[in-house]
Amino acid sequence: MDQTVGVDQTDPNPATQAPEAVPMTEQQSADLARAQEAGWTNQVAFDYDAFQSMGGNNDNWHGAGQVYEWRDEYGDVAPRVPELEAILFGGEFQMRRGEHLANLELQVTIEGAMKPKPFREFQEAGLHPVVMENINLAHYARPTPIQCYVIPAVNMGLDVVGVSQTGSGKTAAYLIPIVSKLMGKARRVQGPRPDINDPGSMVRAEPLVVIVVPTRELAMQIFDEARRMCYRSMLRPCVAYGGLPMRITREELGKGCDVLIATPGRLGDLMDKPHILTMSRVKYTVIDEADEMLHSDWEDELRKIMSGGDTNDDADHTFLMFSATFPKDLRSMAKDYMRDDFVRIRIGRAGSTHKNITQNVIEVDRDRKRDAIYDLLFSMEPGRTFIFCNSKITVDLLDDFLYNRGLPTTSIHSDRNQREREDAMRAFRTGKTPILIATGVSARGWDIMAVRHVINYDLPSTMYGGITEYVHRIGRTGRIGHRGLATSFYDPEKDEGLAQDLVNVLVECDCDVPDFLSHLTPEDTKNINFDDNSEDEGDGGASLDDTNGHHDAEDTGANGFTNGINGDHHGADASAAPAAEEGFTRDAGEQGFTPDAAGAYSAAW
Image (cartoon, rainbow, N blue to C red; front, side, top):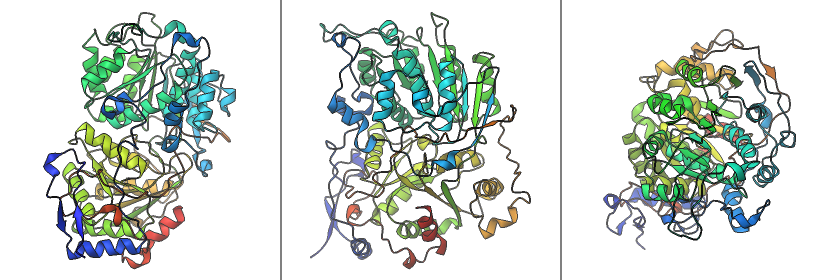
């Protein structure tokens, strides 16, 4: 029987549509047979109804995700809503810590006139009872080091600069105490709500909390976390980002907004529309991934936001900034807007990674990269995999190449429309397309459960982030106590400028330095000079023993691929083989790639 390949009929981009089916080529048939021999099951069509983005309506836009709606008749204690609870805390969004939390035990440095006293258990933090219930529902077992210090600092009313590794729990570190403090006085301070007797009525949004993030995907991710922490409270979270139709943004803000998560561009637009949004009641401004926003030339917008647009009526404003590094321009902004007694909390070395990630560097010439990554993927047991490229065109070309070879891929970059981006993220989160190809900036800060492998198809250029970008990329795996693997293709003609920094990071994390870079290994491996443009002044630091805990978005479940990918790929042509029927083989030793690849993967797991 002649095998044919169906076209993705759910692809929203007409430009990628093609005839319904074409005969498979001999190569595609061979790829398919190879995948079937590995045990992949038959194709399962992607069901958008079954995998909605955490509930909601408005054509399933993430920005219209369902939140807990308080009613006056609830009194002091709001009832639980099992259906919403299952959406917010169940399935792919249920958080479980990993088994290797000890590797997150790091040196803690505190700078400032007032130093918060850390706690070791959430029960010691003096949190609102409803917040404690939400923490338990989210399965946050124990706090991470950054949470142990930031939560008491926020409770003390201090301005905070938090510098910590990616995947260390920064989101929960600020959301938990802010929501807890506001929850105790929510009836008095919550923003206006529309008249329930007038279905068409809308109010001007008057948020108490504004959280600014660099990317749309990170905004959606933090919105999900805010929905969890605000569950069964009077506080209503909203999200605003570019690409989300303004109609939906206006409708959601018009229902009332107490916690607003936004990208700087969209927030700046809203600030220019005082009939939609006022910043006059903001009590907390949080800048997350602050170093990335400064790298992306958002400084003018950030200063406008930090200034508040209009003056806080109560003159009671707390600023919090979080970053993996603390460069000079960020220090300048902190000193301009924060109180003189702001506290800086640094967990480990600024810009560092941790030992839960096994890092491999493989020398690959540019013209051999495509074949190398194909062999590498087949050498690994299936698992969620991030692949990073330095340009949008490389993302598209690699996506098409791998998809046409039968692998379940999707991709994201800034030229994708918002619907495509949200569909791709949903498909990756649910495991329907477990290989995601992206540019580095588009994936900053993402926290997705069970990402086993990060591959740097292109190492980041020293002109565009260098080793800092490298650390952010590999931080998509090995999050909060889970093991992860990062593999990087080193092109000797392009990556020489990154070589020394790369070796330093490998040595710092006790990872093997490849032979072709061994000549760059520092003589004194205990005292490596990291030129990270960050201040290291302070009181010498303090060790926080036994503070390892749970991060705000990680899951040990679903550690393999689920079947089926139909409806999730953008940009592949009609000759693409049925990806769900192919996938990766587990025959690592037969693929002729590097002899260390499969062994390193097995060791990491």
